[in-house]
Length: 416
Image (cartoon, rainbow, N blue to C red):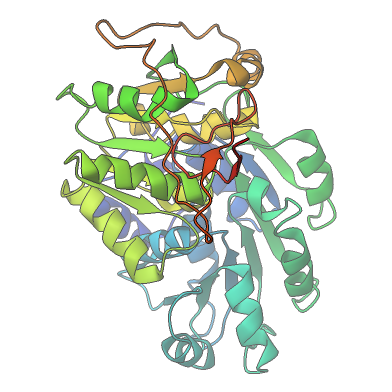
């Protein structure tokens, strides 16, 4: 089957107008392979890399199937793991459905519940929600899913992991059993596929690419560096003006905050996004990154699922992810839509094992390199400590080898 155009897909002319206004001409493989089955009501498990058009792959058949349904009732529910993804899908839905009567509402935490309650009571035809906030509304008794016909689980590998599964189960127990269910994800480990079969009926499996292949167009490079010099090396990299829009991943929220403070101290425009930031702070950081106000956006993995920026020039793995599949998610944020991009990974000796697992997953050896002129043998900075009460001084404890405590004050031990 050739690539074709959207004219070749079973979509109403009203939807084709929305597609044309967005500027889309050729469907991506996940869209081309999913839409014909989904518009017939078939359950779907779709796997494709980040940035390949999964959102439109489920929104278009949802809209197509609901065109003739009566307004004022909720016919479709899209569950997504983060607020950013909910807002992103809502905006995309608004554009695609611009010539139809269908309305969408986003339901997520971090903001007041009033407007969301009115949308739910008013019968928005499509609800896009994070599980926790949706359960808050459902507990109040005014959410009506009696007319629900379609359920979509977006980013399925995260939605169905141990962190999200209990909330998802509670929601599914209150949905009509007769429905279409679609599950989409960038990665789909076998155990998640087995788990998804609990929720889907004879699903159509759609894999448009090998699961182990990282995004096409990405240049991978590993930069070995001691733990205490990671921030210095990142700043050295940022001296390159070609690094114009840089998404940096850390493993924890604490490290993200610490890193941003260091970047700002060195007069590098940077913002941070993670689960402890308020919704207004997250929106402000994303918008500033999109417009170029912030050259660097530091993020944790879950929060970054909603980062949809077309021109990310570089992805930097400040920490090597423990899970190899997470690497694919991260580097997929650059080289989106057949563009090119660079992915740098700062790797300390203790992280080489995790990097080796990533190389096995993506089926390639990642080249190692050193930045000319960088002082790789620089000593860790002296640790600051405050004398305890009573006037006795304590020397800072020497951290265990490999323990990354370069940016926080250690508790000391008494000098002899």
